[in-house]
Image (cartoon, rainbow, N blue to C red; front, side, top):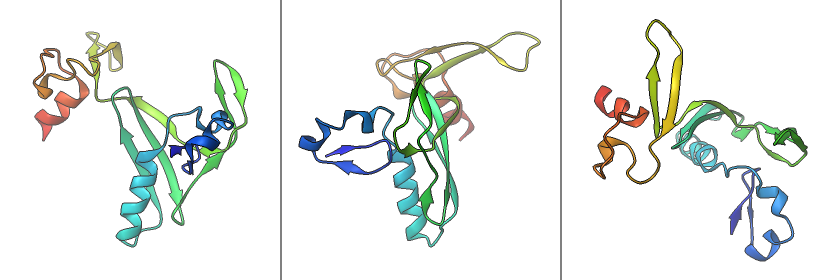
Length: 137
């Protein structure tokens, strides 16, 4: 089974003829959050999913995520049904250096999966967003 951009699943055989339905990152963070909220009896939530490269949010009302058919890839319009997920920031694998006197981040690079953030213990030495979250915890 392959996850579609709209949160649904397609059998592998069907996926071969429907690749456009999976153009965008699968939304497992949204679907997982909906399941957990449902088990807690909560229908209206804002999800937040911090991955390695981005932090994404989605509005869920009545137990259903907001959907859209308007997006772009390389400035080309894509009219494919998908969960309306907005990227609001960097992910946990980002190195951030602030410029002196600036409030905004100045430069960013990615730790990558290998060696990853320093707290993973695989050789990364530069602090990432994940490392900052570990220190704050």
